[in-house]
Length: 357
Length: 280
Image (tube, rainbow over all chains, first blue to last red; front, side, top):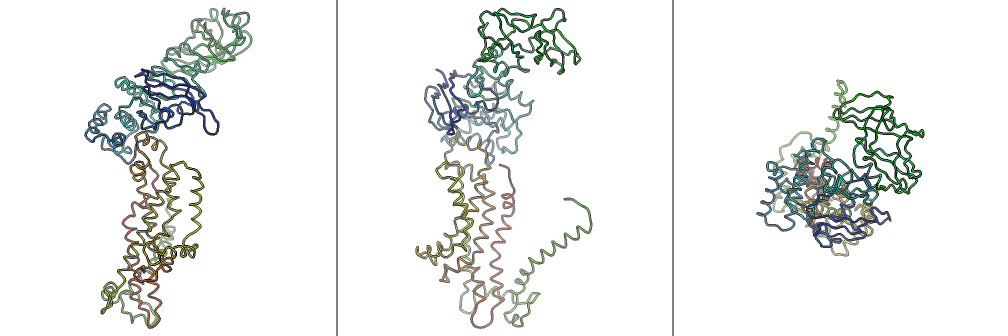
């Protein structure tokens, strides 16, 4: 049985603003789903609707087959981890974790067993008598997770839980959250704006744009076959190069030198996309297209080259190339690029949807 | 501002000393006067050093002399009952109304807040005649209820608690909701502990406010069983025959000063914390 089902879920605020028109999503038991998108795309709203902190304007929300649209957050059997952790500042770590159980009338001895089991799992045993003020950011984060875990809920909800941590801790906690979720096997809905976090954590990703789901799929599906230019630009860093071009007589008019047979394309104007890491640098006489270097970002393990393409029709669209290892390029230098055809993506310029080859 | 100029240091110390002198001199005079026999004031001069009647004066004030019992202690008790009644009443009412205004959505919520806020402009002194009328009609003259109830509604405290509650992060409220804390649990488990220092600060302010009430007790009490200490000081000055017993007046004055001082000293730490602390 599916664990969490969103059927035609929508949110319209009382002032008439439609935050989420309609979303369908079926989440299997134990799945780790990440809602990702830029700020204002409705991802937090959607999570809060599942939590019961926001009302649901339309559609049905089912948790383990029960319709919970109008249930209080406490009765939905969910647990949430907030961005600012929302620990009760006047309670000790132990009381913070025990509070939800206490309110549900769980016996004291049972609470103690559960809390200490979770504390052990998270390495919090030493900190149980401390108050949140006396903890570091990472420890607070752990306590917030512990508070969710002791309840042993049907669904975990995470609202950008790592955005207040520094970069190193974020990577560490990311791995830890993934491991814990696997171990516990609890269905998880996780909101983030960070696409790296999304890619590394998710079983499946939901890319949200202006309240609707642009694409739902595994991280690799989204990376290899983005369904729209929005997903193509959002997933992957640096994002995919997109160049407006035309299709004339079934041929892609990108430049005089490269032409792709695309008889299936009915659209006149298309977006041609290729990822920076799928471009090869080659001698000018063997290259598909010349590229003028504007700026170089040397990161050691890889080199990002920013510049412009010199297309046959006189257009010079901005372009990024990502090369493994360290290379030296001069600003103003002209390089030759080959664009392997198996790495091409085509999108309809009007609908921004992917054109399948 | 950290500056190292000797004359500036001297100047600021002089100003501070002057301030201390102005504040402390009357207290000193009262303290000294309470140790002299009542005859010492007939000449019209004020003694500036202690006399030898301290024990006798205080004994007379607290115990009474030759057969007639002193009513100073009873008045102190009355004052305490009134001050504490007003303080706890105000805190309770304002906590509840601020809780309603901040955390519950109901029609005319902000109108309710502004009506409460509006009453800032209507202290007892302004509405004293209609309030007296109401209290008299309710048959509450000469009662502790009549002394405290009309003073309990407080816009200031409601406003302070509103600010305090609004500084509690929304996520905390939501976390409590998810943890299954209903409105009453949330109030007792989260809200009260978090506003502990604010309550303490208000307690100090409101206790002094209640203790220092003069006009209202003067009007609603005609039975000396309900007289308060502060109003009695004035009454001791208006004797129709004979000299004013200044030494007794000063003892009462000092006695009237002690409880507020004790409250301030006892709660100083929390008081400052409650007004300064922003951490939530």
